[in-house]
Picture 1 (tube, rainbow, N blue to C red):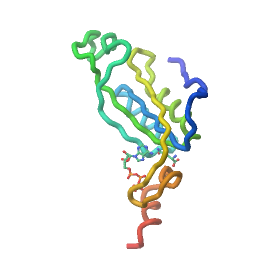
Picture 2: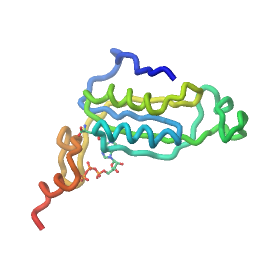
Picture 3: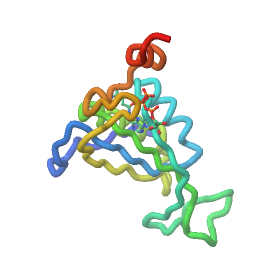
Picture 4: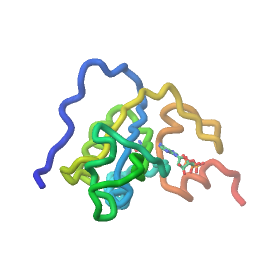
Length: 146
Ligand code: ATP
Ligand code: GLN
């Protein structure tokens, strides 16, 4: 399968500090995608089980060995990742790399500007809330010593 990456980012994207990359993907490709994201330092990811259909109405997509499937809605996973602007293209390329089979039903990626991020534990906003520092080290720097 030839490696492809996203075309260069177009000029209609509104400028923001943060973006949400929202990808609707094949469920069985999620482990590949998430381990690749983890490797590039992405640690904030949300996934949901969703059902959907695209241009083909789910009909041409092979599901459990059968080309015909009565329910047009196929099981997909929605992956949501909020990152700073400079990480967007790398995240999109990682998702394509991990999720692409070249067949109908590989999925789609939506890009949304995000206006702010608030970390509930600390009340931090914006850049400070977006930054994913290392687990316990981060926790102990904010919490009073035990
Ligand atoms: P803390 O340091 O307080 O743990 P955190 O930034 O690590 O804060 P969590 O409270 O662990 O965030 O996040 C809760 C959930 O929010 C995660 O399980 C994940 O679903 C989602 N999440 C956090 N950050 C992101 C992000 N940047 N993009 C997408 N989802 C995120
Ligand atoms: N940009 C963050 C960082 O590098 C990662 C954001 C995320 O994990 N979604 O710390």
